[in-house]
Image (cartoon, rainbow, N blue to C red; front, side):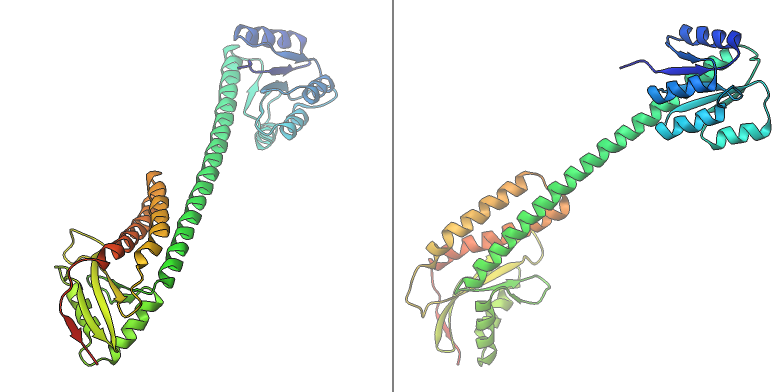
Length: 317
């Protein structure tokens, strides 16, 4: 780290020499100026950390040098020294950003040393704080960009899942413990509409059973002249009333195995969600990802739900 650069300006040659020797004893290598014009030229040519200047000098005053220095570097520290101290001059110096105001002759040169040390330490702390603030801002910007990118990935995964569900011939109904039943895709809405026209509402009866604590066994029903297989798949576990998905499959179709159609997109969604969860996302984002993961698990359960024992067929008009 480079040592601080200091400029001392005073038209009193004897005092200027004393101040330079004191600063050298502090381990500094100060530049010097015998009048305001020379000091101004040095300020324009160099970058100083601290300026110690007499207030009344030929050419330019210490207040003028103070303003010039602050225009070049707002965080430069300036200590004003004067033999004719007045309240007005002290107020002007402090209002223009002077760090300190000393009157001469000094009681002891340690007064100057203490003022210089405190001014340099104040500048160091100020610049350190500014650098730290800039680092934190950059980190914040990077984190914000990363979060935005993750949210884009989550939204893309959500859109893809909704597109997949929208094209399924199977009806998907989300059954919450205390929530209303939600038809999650057009096919689910279609089967709900058919059930509303039936006499004994077999789909609504199965959904009611699925809202209980125990998951009902798969059931075959006849609805609107079509044979449907109803299957309940758990979304959550360990709760008083676990959330479930009710899958409605129309067996009246040509018997094509839709599980093969689901395999590739569902596996891709599962892998993408696993990667996002592996990055330890924030809590809000993690909850969204976990909800999507449970839906993917429900989709994976579709294929296994097509096989298995079948119960008697319920009939409805």
